[in-house]
Amino acid sequence: MTSEFSSREIETGRRLFGVQWDFLSAASSPQSLPPMQGVEIAFAGRSNVGKSSLINALTGRKALARTSHTPGRTQELIFFSAGHGLTLVDMPGYGYAEAPKAKIAEWTALIHDYLRGRASLARVYVLVDARHGLKDADDSILGALGESAISHQIVLTKADAVKPAALTERIAGLKAKLAKRPAAFPEVLTTSSHDSAGIPELRAAIARLLGERRG
Image (cartoon, rainbow, N blue to C red; front, side):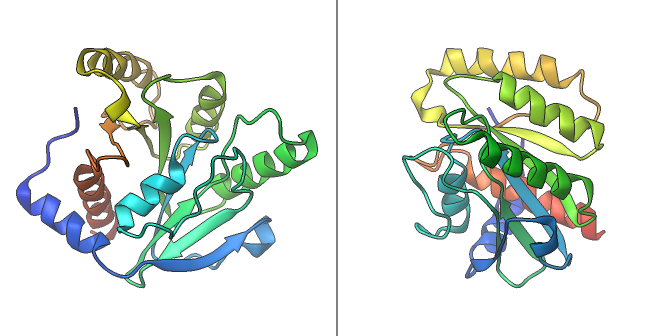
């Protein structure tokens, strides 16, 4: 269910993430964003879609990104670095209606300010729960990414909880929708932080993107 990657690309991705990743900084406002350097990859998604779990799976660190059963816990842009020119960004989860409206407005403004003014941002991976597919909140962020002409790609999470036939159907539906969005990468990646399925391929995809950006 994932894009094709050579064994060499898989190994490059493994080495890219097989180093020590650490917390770099947290930003709650545009003024507190860290200086732009190297290449940034951001992860966006609805609250409880599994962003933190995916980042932990990618980096091989169980507690690098905070995970919680309480939606909306990540209220800042969280930056992680391994010191080799690639920075991972955990964005605040969206679509959590029970958070105070003022706080939701702050998160939304922060996300949009970050997306509009970050020249070092190479791609946003929009995480979508494989069990549920796209929701209205996802359409909103996809629209913002398209308007800003920011490269983005959908990554399905929790794919282990969906039967293969249903997953194939879900991917086909997503690809049809992405075809109407010029800034969206056409391929859909599937992952599971539970059994690590698709994690090597996502690492390889990021390594490929990093190579293209540097080249």
